[in-house]
Image (cartoon, rainbow, N blue to C red; front, side, top):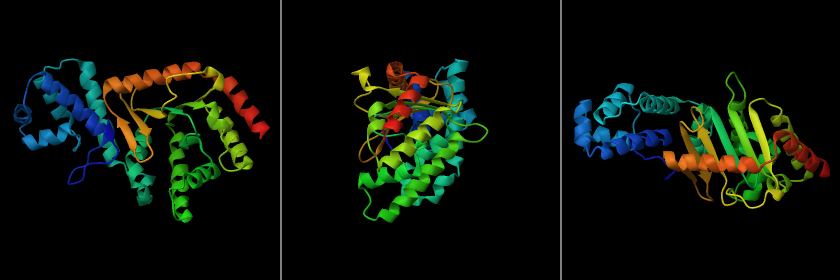
Length: 293
């Protein structure tokens, strides 16, 4: 696991860069090779290889192919996956998105940039509606309740940024979004009743979109593996082929970047979703709670 803060200096560590560098590091160590041997194969310095393995620099396709050849990796599927990962990382580093307008939210830039280039997201939320489906009033009420701002005027850029994020659900290639949401998040009063009614109506509208899957996990589902933590699986290719996982703590964002742990989170998500209501029954439950308000 790795925290969200990038390495400082001439180069910047990214989530996807670390994922790719970690794969190459593992392959090198399995062959019992030193960084100097990798550097020689690339006609590069040991320092460059070290930066590559730490995810500090974007990687060129010829370098990846050369290292795979050196490490004895002949599988086209494995090599193609690494090349795809490198391309996603280069795209992420070049991205000049809306988030650059909000320097006060710099700690979340990595997540915003990944969300912008992702193909699919699967998010499990226990206590609140995920940001991509929040209304402005709901987001504002959440921020006020959080109590993290001394000056309430600072909340508005946060709300604006949250709404700007939702642009990834529009356009020619909208993000494929699968939300598993605990019933408690629907019944937790955030703001007043009008705020909640509007928020639940927003969920009902989102559930009609062809690229949004919304499932409610009811109280009656009982104990399940998602009770301890909310998380989001971000996919840049077919699910399971190129994923990272993000989870929040009170003070930071945690990234899960290795294959075994991301696969484990994806399996847990599918188990949680398996306990959820199907989309039609989820819509009925949301509408019922809305009417109760």
